[in-house]
Image 1 (cartoon, one colour):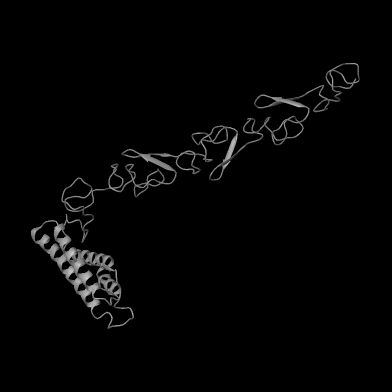
Image 2: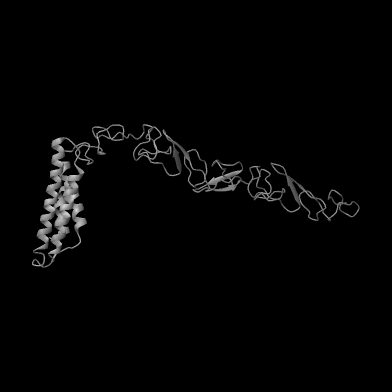
Length: 306
């Protein structure tokens, strides 16, 4: 694929497939093409010398080839009539791609900083212990507990769902540190992961989901992020409940939505609700309530009719 791109890419850049006056490009385009060809041959020659000496390619050799090319290309554009002017950088990149493709097909040289053939990596040297071995095989192994190269975590396995995935990338909702990596769910980010039973997007207590993302007593939480509401009728006073007598029956002092009913006072957990005799509100077992607890006025001190 890269070899095919070499020819097509250069042709497109020089405008050989574009319409236009042949006479206008009669001087510029051939000169550009010649300069590019010489550059490609010179670069391949640099690599050939490196292969012959079993050494990394000489950077100075490559720089010299590029410098000559740029001078020749500028002279070509100076002739005028170019199909595409100001394209030296694009052509330069195309030649680099072609050179890499050619050398990868011929014979890769471990240590030349070009990955070719069956090389898994090439960091420009033949030293082991730097993530790329002396034979250009990767020393980075996801799941070995060693944090190396592009790995953002490595917890010693390639299992998913534990915070560090099979590509050694932290999973959403986790924070990983150390080597081997220890990954912890991020409580308060609105995502339920790991051992979290809820996550409402905050780390506040008393809202149903604790600062450790555990479900608090008296609440139920659903959804992501979690929405937590008090469970009325469970005998636990939580959230905005004013009482909870262990049921959702009206008329017993604590109503179906866990608020104290008129004429009652509720205390304790579970709530015990009793009528308030003398408040002027007949409630519960009261037969009457005249607003006082005096006997002899028709409604006695226990709010029973006299």
